[in-house]
Image (tube, rainbow, N blue to C red; front, side, top):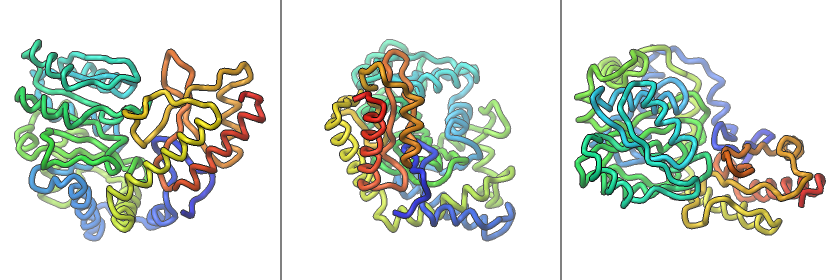
Length: 367
């Protein structure tokens, strides 16, 4: 895989292919027919990944993934609704903050950062609080890499007649999610994650019936998914200036996604990256924060070396000088650092990262 140095071992932005970067070398008119056809093709390709053509709209939105999460909450949760937010990391906490800022009633259920929410937890909470209308779940909590049991939770939510909103930012495109098997009002993802595009565009897979009935819910003009979808259906265009280069890059990335073999192949490559990383770090005496059975092959949190010589900033700069960019830990109680397994990188690249980490820690006399 030919990439420009340094390799980003982060949860997004991430290292993209040469083809994806080259796709941004052309300027597009936002009303141009060819650009509108590209947008339509992109939406169709995204829907195909979840087999959602019959049940869901794909509504793209300018901005980061968090913009799209806020748009989904603001558009699809009625102003008299109540959201149960399942929290075991920073992005669950952010989702709760979005509900607070938007004035949507909510409650939180928080587990430890290395403990997934269970379906039994959700069943009990929905039984206890009949006012809850929606459940919001982070599929893969990027702050640690923990994988929450989406399928089991979705069944419980459906059995209670409630609505499910899924933040699949770090899982969509690499972990299987099938709209024919899971009931959800919204699934939210973004361009700069497992699809290996560049950041700048979020998108929401919104249940058709729910979105059709959501007119007037939104707190915002710019983030009104109902209005965005209606306008696109009528005109083929974005309501406001689209991120044209981001759209072009993602479309090109989706072509490569299909060429690689789609979701099964993408998952296999990331899983091999993760195994290479875990095996190599374990050989150095570095342990992962999340148990293997709930570790998603997206990003891995490692305990920092137990050495007085270890300083993350020094470690980061040394590894960067060797061609790899890591991520700081996002835990409050334990010192950690994170290494992403996603992006245009394979197991050879991951082994190179492991070697660079080992060299840096030995130079610091931290292992």
